[in-house]
Image (tube, rainbow, N blue to C red; front, side, top):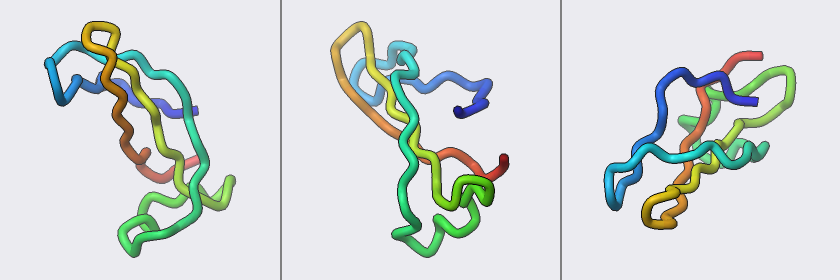
Length: 65
């Protein structure tokens, strides 16, 4: 699970988003190699949901274990 201390802000309304889920994705882009989680063999993508406007957004976690 992601260990981010900074909350994601909604790109539509600016409200603080809720961390909804984590998803393991394969390395698909060259820049993903730097973010690969070696223990899991992929990149963790965080999915966030905005309680204010209902928007959904995601971001890729930095590498680590």
